[in-house]
Length: 395
Image (cartoon, rainbow, N blue to C red; front, side):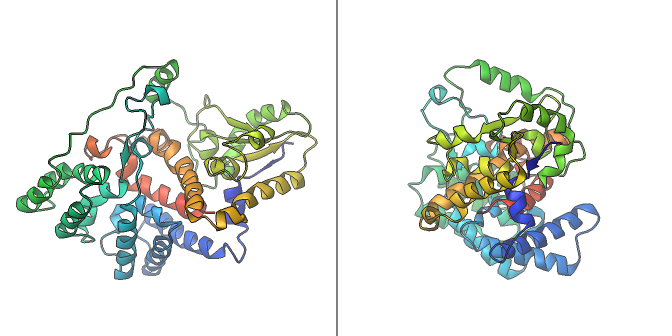
């Protein structure tokens, strides 16, 4: 009988104590409303009220404000004023945060030495929500004009706003005169162009070939919003094969698309040796770049490792993030670690391919310049992403 430990994100959520119970309550209120609204109705007035209140609570917290990037757009209109205020405040703060553009698209990041400029293209992603915020009355044209004037040296921000002008024009969200004024403030920027790698590697060719390959899901009835451990039953035999190859006292962490619910029979596991991780400069416990490894994966041990031992080791690595003076005294480091959870659980690869693979939804009504050929703007994706974020993206 195989013994394994659920991902740390799940175990923390399920056994929330006084310190973490407030976040769990907010997540429950968000998930309760989004589950009901998805199934048959828009939820009761009480469920809706609790949803907005819980979202407002997270929007007001610096460590959780990025949930704004995923909240379903359909519920922006008709929101209470306190929610709208919290949303606006968080949106303004996120105007200072740039992300790798491909993180919110297909994940097509070239190898380091294949990048034409040696770096990655950046975007202020919350600016791409401008059309919906204008439609719902969260911001107005004059505010955008003021932002463009005050931030005229921030080319990434101006370019991110410029990306939305065509969509705003086509949907007639602003008058011709209003849009013309905004366009004039970004007219000096170059047009977006598709960046090609300096060379095409064998790995990239394999990645491109995989994009259009028909697949058979391993768990077609999975709940993409978690809990992910419910999917383990479908690949227990393969997990047993991994365990059979371990040394008696060895511990590994196992994850990948199969665990998250959108894997196929051919999907590989991500397997990390704890011993090797602890020796790594980039992936050792407490490193923000490795947060997803220790929190989002199954813990598996050799035959001499019992559940108590696994639990003790998992708690020790969790403490390197949660009960660490280093993190307590450095908010930016903590937010970097939380964003690593976000990218692993929501962007890589749920947004990039998992959602379309699982749902069959692969047609989108948003311009390519806004990364409109991916599910980012689809409310069903945003419903799932919001539930994942509320439950699991926090330390």
